[in-house]
Image 1 (cartoon, one colour):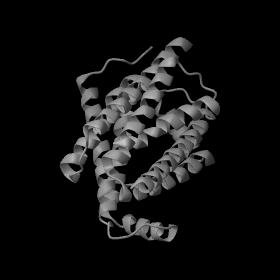
Image 2 (spheres, one colour):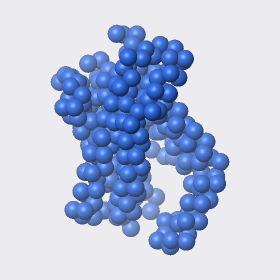
Image 3 (cartoon, chains in turn green, blue):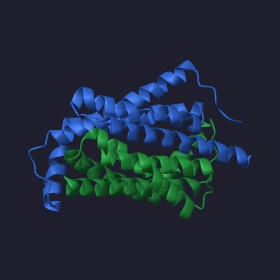
Image 4 (tube, each protein chain N blue to C red):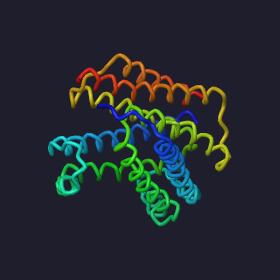
Length: 127
Length: 138
């Protein structure tokens, strides 16, 4: 059971990591387009078209497919309530990636929230 | 300017997205359970498992629901801020365990509920802090 839990947690970490990489590619693709929110339909379609032809979007898509495959493997091994709770670790990865790669600044509230998520995952895993 | 006003229509959309998110996870779990007789112990076993799941109607019901949630979520975010939307949407962290008990007959201990509560509060704090950050940038 102990070893099984470790494998499942590693797989959940892997799917969360793939999700984070997907988000980073998506964010970087969108950032490169310099789009400002608008209700102009033509501009919105132009934005979507530029996004669809952006290779970074498709790199992100590949990672989201990998993430889904691993997620299905996780669900074959773990209870849904546990897997879904533990999957919240993508918040931690996204926080780290935003801080280290995108150089976004964090408030203490966000660190507190991230800390609570980590404690929650530990408690859920121990139970 | 912040888009903060949560109207009844937005609230219903948010609850719908919570319920559909729960449905997605239920469908995915069902598609995996349908292949429970397959033993996934190595990459080859994983490939056989994934191929079988690919042909499960539950998987496609789940993916269809993902598309529906994406459309609903885009509508929500065009009306209200992410920092307002995410805390309400994160109630799927409560809905999914409840659905697991009712439909999948999983058992959840008090300690696990406590962990889930920690995660829920954490997610809400993380999303609230994005509002604070934008407010400082203004």
